[in-house]
Length: 108
Length: 117
Image 1 (cartoon, chains in turn orange, blue):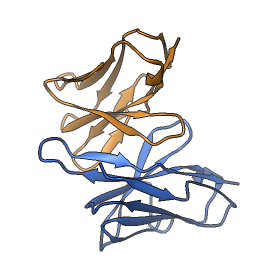
Image 2: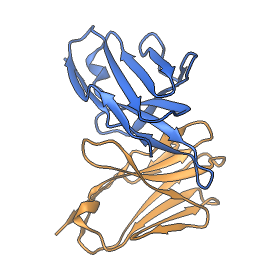
Image 3: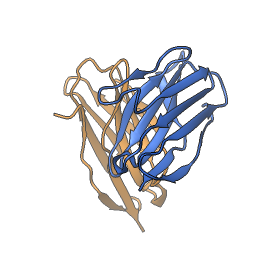
Image 4: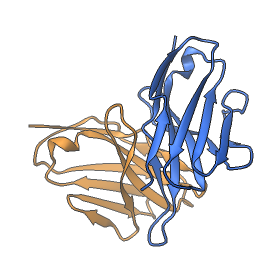
């Protein structure tokens, strides 16, 4: 089993749609969790950290379920500029483990 | 966040040669890392670049193939030695920033796109 698993997609959604990405991780001792965004041929950029209580940043909401070892990212009112690959990242105390990413394509 | 630059941004190299990639940060950072992202795949940690001592390599990566230097807290190099086409990849430098109020976070340089013929 992979340490971090994501649905690779692609998710093709119209502008204005709500889309959710899921991620599971295998190490129950993992401490920190993140979502990164990676545009084509660019470096990953931090989108948001994920906290146990859940957190929201504008149109983006991240949730963590430690019992199920599950992380989610919800994007509301999708924009064309949201098209990218979203990487689920887990910090296993000494290093980051990256998921393979979920590709999102928002169309007009 | 720290501003990270890498040189070169891309290169095409012949097999058997070596390439050294430079990573420069605009502020002093304790933790610097080197990652590889092969086509269509996610990031894999190569090693942690330690200032003043040998780098710490992950399983599957060795110093002879990927020698790393870290002469100070703002600079590091990664050399890809005796290259083969399987080394074609994007190589990314990252730094970790510590925050009292939030989780330690890693930020990435723009990457070096390497193609080995």
